[in-house]
Image 1 (spheres, rainbow, N blue to C red):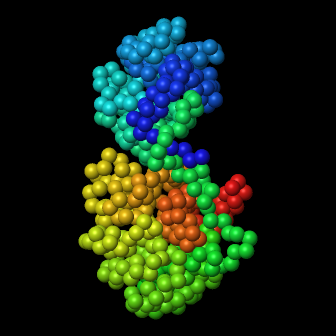
Image 2 (cartoon, rainbow, N blue to C red; image 1 turned 90 degrees about the horizontal axis):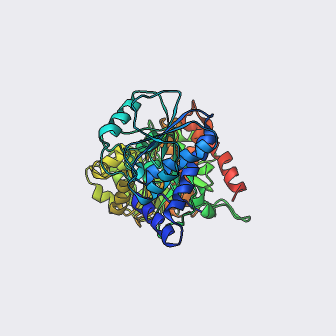
Image 3 (cartoon, rainbow, N blue to C red; image 1 turned 180 degrees about the horizontal axis):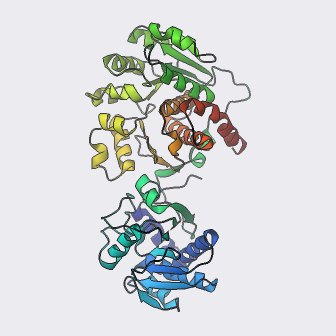
Length: 483
């Protein structure tokens, strides 16, 4: 089952729903604090522990964790930023019999620190002793475990609320990841993230999910026993001129490896010889005008346009001609930039089956200012999908895929080894190949992004884009085995 990503408000609602169904807040707090203690014991050798507790329920989790660690023989000191202020936190503090000290700025690299100060619900910058402690921690290499989120990190954006925020080596959160756990800034601050089950129920009507096989695996387009190449999808890829052909071939090879049955590179005449010299299973066909291109694509299930296609009116006209064929479009790179002066003209060509795959620079060109004025990337991608009327995949270490109907997913398996020229061209091929096989476009974009990242992680150092298509079969074989 796909795992939801929650806002802070949605998580609070899940807590309230559990209480209404008969699970008291102290019971939830006991489960949460014990989960923190278990995660610490599973990852660290026994050592002295200092637990920083805030006045709210996050602090209450800290008091519970202190009790469970001490019971297991750990030397635990609790330091409180303020007295407990909620009924549940008061309950948890009353059960801790080890004494409570004020926050200390005397920090030791040999001590393990647990940040149970404020968590995801904080909406203002850290102040006073807590802010000074956060700044002191920033200057030292300390082992810090955060409860829910590092204090000072906004739960819905992953961004520091001011100039003082904690970072963590390990973060233990509960029930589901919040946005701070999936967006790049927050993930960097959180370190490793453990999601502990404390007995809450799923949120009804969730539309933001972790991107993984649980989201789209049941609808992956595995071939039927009587499949043939045309039933497995016909994909066309538009090539650039003779000196810009490699990107289209990368896309074509990616589409073929992901399962598309018949893949053709549509090539300007001056690039035919260059493309022919490098293509084998991928077919080749010429086009001289946008009308020729539309004719060549009439029988296609999906078309990829943009990888090294050239920036300018010619590419814009080619896309507009392709939009009239009825094939689903994967629009990348140069095809996006070709509409930088008139994004509305691009949007007018698109429908909900089309996919745009911009990196942040290309996103800015066709959605100017949207990233800067959005609270975070999820909101920006969702608004972009609404404006374009198409699926938008916003690339990055926290790739976001958004559909015009409001559905969105965030990839958690991003890898820095994909930061290499041509990687995005293969991604476009993976997505286009899945759409050509009949996969719904939002799910195809999610699946393509996940498989792409898995391929990159498997290769690791030294990866170049040419490696990626050849890595896909092993990933697909594992998906097929566990379907």
